[in-house]
Length: 189
Image (cartoon, rainbow, N blue to C red):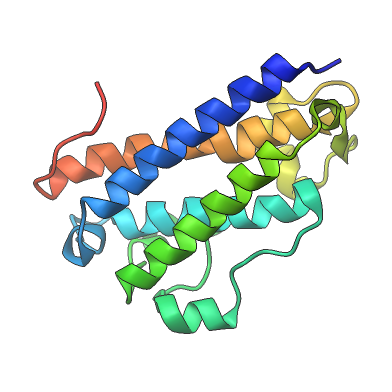
């Protein structure tokens, strides 16, 4: 049922969102991303690592390709908590910090480049493929993508839209707000 126009739109929106992440990453330094505002407020480091690592992990469900993140990347990036934190509390994740910000930006760019290359070579018909059929497993059943899922389950289009694009925009909004807390401005109007 999907057509080339849907894929074209998804490709353009993904590139636009990735350009916001590149702009944000390049206009901040390690003090900005690791800034601790106060209890109950996660640092930008959490948002950046969480979304990048979630995109990386989601790619496995969507394509079968293993994640990029591994022990070698952890050694390079030196995350204080080597976990995207999806199933952790805010009280735990306020301690998230990035050790080597330049290494993190390389990881971010690799994840985004892999996603864009995959979308460029994707046959639009693939967007209709079911990646998580009903009944949805417990770790997915309570997510936004479960609310989006059709009667057949979560399709590849649902997954790309929810897990990468919409989730990415959510965290970009958090990053833009947090940039104000560290003396930087927003990037869009």
